[in-house]
Image 1: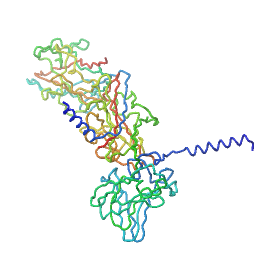
Image 2: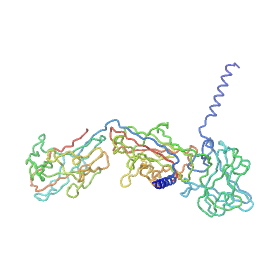
Image 3: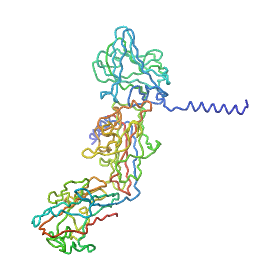
Image 4: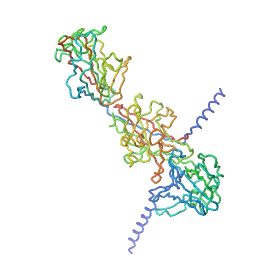
Length: 236
Length: 402
């Protein structure tokens, strides 16, 4: 034991001599934020074609095949410009639908879910005057970016991450978690991995949201829509 | 004259004299510096500028009897021993002639020759790089009432080695020297020889060690303070400079490869910034830059910090042109625990102050009149900062030998 200790001491001395410290000074740097921070959020719709203002999220009907039995994912002609300032740790913005809501016109109100495995799903575009049910929904997706995208990929099949399905507060598996979070105190979320972990983009004030929908077995003369897309701002 | 009036006048004159004697806007470096620079870009000492600065020297050169006048040019390149500059010397002499050059103490705007007391210093040190010819018999030393010199060969200079060689002259060992009455403080007698050689890092040194000091000052009024701070209005803001700067003062020259490093001392490589006191996973990144003078300055250097995009995310001075050598003066802070092996955390070294990324070290000989006291500025990125939290960091500066 004694021999080993002596060798260790010798090695320690050699290390010190090769990089000698002659003098040192240390300071404390500090900043205190006495206010709890803020949470602010806004979304404005614009047309992808010319960036002029829009009032609704729409798709080009001429771009959708009638009667196709395969799901066709189409990008909406409109995108949203998001503006957020979140400096409160608990601050975030959820995105979800409320297709069962009776507060708006009943044309696109859903009373009957579709089934995905055993889950009851109300989210997406609802076939007009159908009340929902299997075959009467067009699922919707969204993607978030911190730069404008000329050709946004909103097809959930092409890549596992980056696009997320819209969810509805009445879905049987609805949970307010990162999957339906658009932005939090760490910045805009552009994806949620298979473990449910949010992938944040570099934090900045402005974000962009693009929309998609999957159309299948579309009948001519019908319309699909949703009157209730909600951004819920959480301040506490 | 009325006696009372006479007394008042005397007091007034006495106070005026006191004011004149005490007014010493420029420090006498010979009196209080442990390292006195004669030609060194990192230490305070003499200045070759005329004016009211007390520590004036004048460069003198002479020749005669067939010897050519020595050519001594200041050259700037990366081969300097310290800083960026060195003297490139060329002498050409026939027999029986005389030539040489020296630094002479002068005073006032008229540059009148004067005598100074350098007895507080124990050594005169410099570096020489022989190039052509034979420098062995060059005499070097000082002048009091006569020249007091030794040969370069006696100092161990190897004429065959064309690399920088250090020469140390024990001042009290010069024959019959009176160090209290020095006229020429660096004398080079090059008579009757032909040679080329370079000189650099010419300093006087005391036998004791001197000091390294770092003083924290407020940017607003340069008053001393004790903590590096930002206003809480920076919440959510991108890179913002702190309200203070650290003024460095180096009067310690114990190694020719000295470095001054800056880093956080927070105990972990990941804690290379301001760490939330109540949640150590919340870290605000920090950065630093060093300047030869206070910012913003007349060279257009500012405290506006910006970050470029991928892939480099380099920090640059928003107030400068992208083609300016000092466009990228900011360095991300690293923590001591990262054990940075390169120069990324080196703020100041024998090469000069680390003015911009990569190997951009610059000497400060142009600051010899105002004083060589470089300033370290700090910044932080509050984009991800959260309200209700206090963030803190230990910032350390360390002088050590490479």
